[in-house]
Amino acid sequence: MFSNAAKLLLLISLYFGIKCLQLNNTKAAYLILPVKYRLNIDLWEYSILLDLQRHALIKAQRRRAKMNPTYLYDVDDTLPVQRGLIYGLQWAFIMFPALIIAASLVVGSLGPGHGDKVRFLQLTLLTSGLFTMVQTLWGHRYPLLEGPSTALMLAFILLAPLGLPAIQGGTIIGGGLLILTVLSKQLDRLIKLFTPNVVGVILILIALGLLRPLLRFMIGAAEIHPLPKGQTFLISLFLVLLIATLSHWLMRFWKSVSILVGMCIGSVVFLALGQLDWHGLLSASWVSLSPQWIESVPGFSWPAAIAFACAYLAVMVNTLGSIQSIAVITDTGRLQTATHRGILVNGVAGLSCGLLGIVGTVSFSMSPGVILANRVASRFAITYCGAILLVAAFLPKLAALLALVPTPVVGAALCVGMGGQVGVGISTIASQKIESRDYFVVGLPVLLGTMVGFLPGGMFDALPGPIQVFVGNSLIVGIALVLLLEHLILRKRKSSPATSK
Image (cartoon, rainbow, N blue to C red; front, side, top):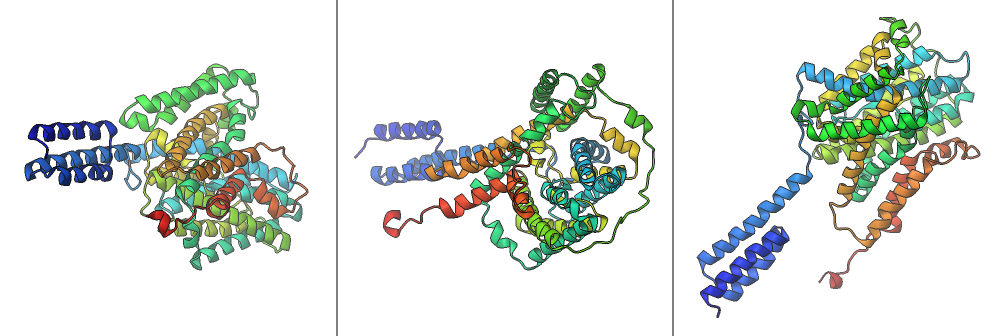
């Protein structure tokens, strides 16, 4: 038997062992209980051991709490009107360049005389703002923006020679098939495929997939009178560090608008360098209504129907990835309902956009990184952004104000957000026990998916249109690869009963 002094010495050793090793509750119990029975200690001494066990549990709970981000406003928190408008404007500044690019590409693909850029931009603002509001209030109810889908835009451009009526018909068919998929209750099977590896890869791919356009933004390639690219990139790099610093050191409200503050400072810098173009803002009219909402009657074409059916499959995967990624940092409890409603709204948006003859919407995946930077996870901030975009569709002066921010400044803000998103992806993957197979399940899709984004343009022109929609999209390629590796090629081996013992 052990003496009381030996027991006391062992208790002290256990205390510091648990504290230094930071053992969780289960491991502490495995360490403590054998000691109880081996030493035959009395009730008072065992209560000390239980205190040690509780100490380990508290430390484990604190570590888990540190892994979950804290927000100034949580996902369902309502916002004061003034702050809601400020946060919404911050999102609108980030969103607007993508809408302008989408409208310009679509009009350019139709050729001269076949598309009105003002009409396309107005309707793109209208549908993006409207369905952003619908999604945040009734659909998935997550802080996600809705905007033109890259996969649908690619299908639109590829099928432009068939004419706008064929594109309208194909978009309507694709949106209808998406609605039927939700109503047939087949989405639950897909949701089970999104393991921590899959969700983490999607988060990282979203950020790395934006590297190519992000680089063009940060060097000012889209500016009318650009500075030397090296100088522009250095200014953008300074703004990236500035916004990250503001996000880290500012407190409460100012932390939540750190991106907007950084964008304002960046715009002032470019104004001082004579790179801010005020002509568009001064010449824009105050109110404008499109004279023709529906330009042509939708038609039917087999190539367009097949291409858009495939494109909407990509939209479904994209939306699933976006919802899964935002749920990781906000609320996973509503995930199943959110997925069904979110994809259903995407289908309804397809019907509406097809009738109007514009690109259908998808849930944008940039939100997690931006939310981690400004610490505002409220979905109502995105609702305000949708309202601003909706109003901007009829107020060209407001649209011109949103377009005033130089693209290098927008690129710097996005870079900060995407950097945070990569970190979330890594932490999601690391939340499970890492095995040797996980290095390939995660690494290969990230590497190959990112590589697709840097392939030369026109490389897949010889392939059929529906295949081009998939192989030309880095996110879709990466998601397909990680699902294939995770659940088929490198799936986990089922341990036999003998092995588990």
